Length: 433
Length: 181
Image (cartoon, rainbow over all chains, first blue to last red; front, side):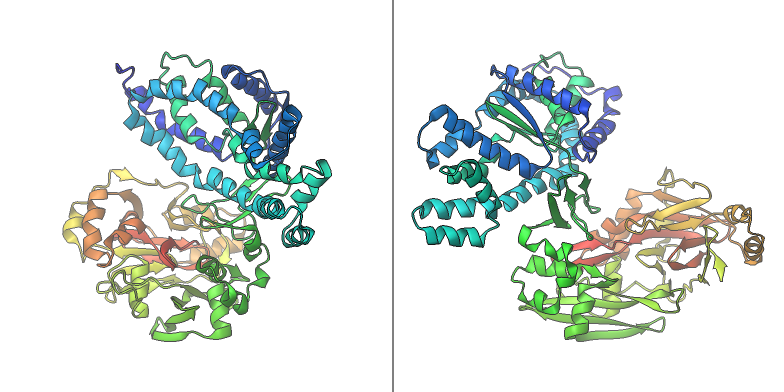
């Protein structure tokens, strides 16, 4: 294919601002406005038209991805039963949630434009737009929300559904399943369709087949929109423009022949300095209906572990020792309560083996070893160089940086030097405050 | 009792580095390594053209405090004079009495070539790229001393010279994470 475009200096200077604009769109925490909803109605209808489909009978706006997923699952099941009036089976679940609309709209919009732009200066723009936006946003938005809705709905739906369909006639099993899980989605399904509750729930498990994008899936849109608005490639944008608009004005989108569900933006997205989902004092992601995701430096806490952040007072030495997952144990050790990290509280309660100590600027420094479920962890115990207004000194218990080869921190001097990236042999403190 | 850069009364002392003990000036999670004695050739070749953060209101910010909003900063001359314009006469008198007042000038700049050369020289031999990852930039101080200030740490009075500015990591299991201040 002949080259359609070469990146000009005038356009090159717009790469960074374009990327930043789309990062803002992906990370949006302002709620949808009436103007956004009007834009979404028009653009959703445009997407269906682009796929040669009649417009959906209903365009519904919901407050969170969890509501979106459950509603999309239930609705697809109900519409399938309405259209088919046949016995609901596992095969029907696939049919009910098959991404008929997604396939059609993707073929009509995405492939046509992406292929045409592929021969443009992909290398230069790809890194500056798609890759950069994806790196800046993916983990903190799409991936986190996807995993969280899967986790949040699993207990309530799939596990319950599996047990129920496997032992449909065994009331005892059903009762046990209901007791073992949250059960709220199962109860709701029974209320809506008493004889087809299991089918409704199985469609919720499969509802991600209906997911068609939204503002959190911004990286690819960033890339193509540069070619539309900045490079102004003379392509037919009349279909893709709807996909672009849908990525700007709405959150997650579930598309079905009979309905389209659009999720509002979160009210909070909290990240660490590596742009991973993270928040110490509450949910890292929050929607207006209370759906919350708890994260620690990129580790998403499943619903049964969200108490580690939401109810930190439950982190006791016993709870730390009882935790089987090393990553969750680590979170418990790192998290601070009343200015003390879990390391400090654990060492206060259980002690730590002192493996090295020295004195610097009149204050003791120690390297301690704690052994948790067979996993050795090294902790540096140091005191602040500055005296607090109340005359005390702050004390810090932090993970000691080990030598990459020996995997041991060595002396306090070596561990402190390494924590600044410095060679312990040439490191020497002229002063410390 | 002294006055910090916001004009607040604090218990901050002014500490003078003793470079006979070593080249590293540490203020919490910030480390400045004085290069003049240990890497003279690299110092002579430093290129100051890429200024990272120009002075604003008499302050050069070295490291931002992401959590507390408290930053490690260099206070340049004139700032203390501005602080003396506060309406609190007693505070203004106390500021005037603080001597000697820092009178130097400082600039924070990037020099990737110099940083690469230094990683192998002063970085930890087991992982020199750790130093590179923690490196913020170079600070050139001339004309007189300047003050390295932070609301939660005593002030360090930096003499003229060339410094490599870096931050600190802590171990977090399989990863190393920048200390969050």
